[in-house]
Image (cartoon, rainbow, N blue to C red):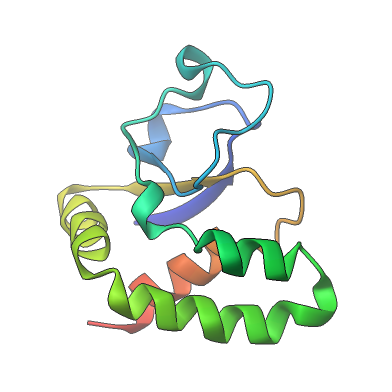
Length: 115
């Protein structure tokens, strides 16, 4: 099972592997409270893409396209996530406020749609 969850939501046993998919550590969250299995910065959007997008809903469609292209190049990190997913539940942990338009949502779709 593959799911996404904000880092500010309490962890649960149903999360399985909890992987932070952000380049920057989320504000106000201790490593103990995060209870992560892994922090996989390499699969997060590039700093240039993140800064360009700036969580502007008008740029969402283009952000998804550009981030998808970056994910196609991040073969090692993506393979690591696929391996974890084969072993059990994988929760992609993100920090963005927008629960519908964030990089974890795009990453989840990428993992579900590509081999």
